[in-house]
Image (cartoon, rainbow over all chains, first blue to last red; front, side, top):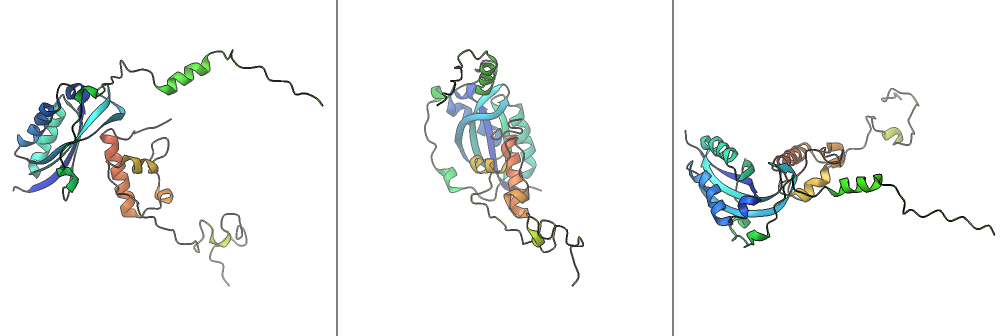
Length: 151
Length: 92
């Protein structure tokens, strides 16, 4: 029995792929939905931010928010294709009752060359680690305590 | 007059509420808190108010939410963790 529902999909895209071109990447991701007979209602860039934890050794990612209408039986196939895709680091598909109005607003243009790529292997050490190292170093610069003057 | 607490005079006028203590059957009704913003996994700034520095979800006692909102909060935080917007474990 066919039953169509509206879903919301948030994908984390690899910034290395984003730098190659946003529109081709977006088309490739939306093709994963249409391949399984889904109707893409909206697909727009949500944000580009640092991830809370590294995914596939990447510390930053671009978030693509997609609303689509699909058969309930096909969602598992879409989810599986997302997992196989190299450009999609992580995806989350949840059902939604209605598409928010802001989803239909045109996407703001951005410069793909300004997108930062941070790899965990090449990234600078975290500020906390740097602070620990400096704390371990001998404290030579510390000033001697000033003796109190007796009146 | 019967003593419903069953503990005699012990702890009746303590620092933590006296007769209306934590475990008393006369405890004041809990004040329910309504969420100020939608409990959505994309609303990371608001959700991060309800996790401890270690990344654990706060209890209903701390958030003050009713059961339905607490479940929505927990679900939203878990979704945000999966997508990489919030950490599973914070500062340990």
